[in-house]
Length: 469
Image 1 (spheres, rainbow, N blue to C red):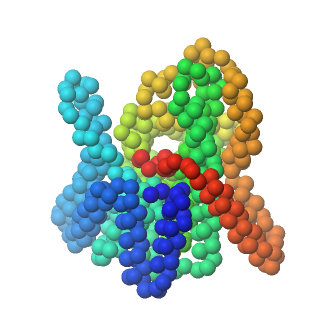
Image 2: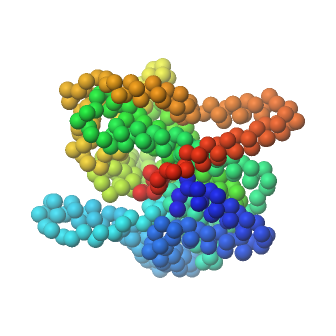
Image 3: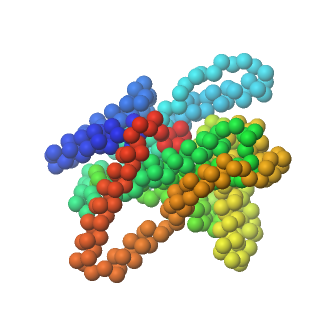
């Protein structure tokens, strides 16, 4: 099941909200959320629900053992075993066939692949569990005594399958003591509707262009067509992933959970370093706190630490060499910026540093898109005029003319115009007029919901891009 789905929008979520608010009993509400979360996960992949429950139960017990033996060798042993299990399962299901394939190519062997399909969300809930175990070992949080509550933390469906990566310390108190006000419910609904519109109105439309230009016949592609295709992917992946995060954060508010922001308008950045402080913030902070700083951070072996982090960042996104290249690509950019380029970028006019960043990001998304390195090389060659293609083509001209207003809309909403306008309105309007703004927001939510619903009718299955990670 996905959020951008009529069954979810008009049956699953309303029924969940209704049953949740029937009683004020906290234990009842937790059980309702766990039940709906497990059903949500099992909807598309019933077999993997057992893997999720097994992993959660095993790591729940490890957490108790780690806390019980804190300061002893048994805590260290339990910590190591828990992480071996946690990342071992991720390695088998996500990277097993990739490793076998490369061994076969390197050694000329013919080891049979395991043939596992990737359990949805395993990368996200593995990192959530790992952060919990490390925090318990460090003594930063107390181990959760209730298995139901720990299962709620791991399986809560708003962020289970595509993030943001939620740390136990962020919501530990809210598992027991959350409260929902009418104002927060309204904010949650608004955030959800915005995320839905991002996905359906912008990301899905951009995805159609991406399929046509990047996923089609490259032999017919012009230089401008290649740039248009990768720019559409730049738009698609931002609105798809940030839209999911908005919907997850919005639903969290509806049930009293406050997840941290995962995106902060990354395309306004002026360097690769700044970009990654704004893009997928929960992943970046995870690698910073649990890999980069423990390895020494900026204090020793800084560039080696950066290389390890960005290698792992690329590998986390998928079992394919293009993701590893994509991670190393950004690692190299950030290293160059730390060596000298950041000083140059601060001195030149902001428009040029922004253009530098967007050029690097767009090239990076080409690396990210093509798992076939041969196609990647061909596409980059076309982009930079090395394949003898025409600069322009009539079909692209027609596409641009027919979609000019949508393109402008997509570009504008990459910028923080809406929040700045909203803040300006709140400071300028009196309290009475701010109430009118509240009703305007309700109207806008309805418009976004109706338009998104109309566009979803008749559409085929359209999962979020990050489901596969």
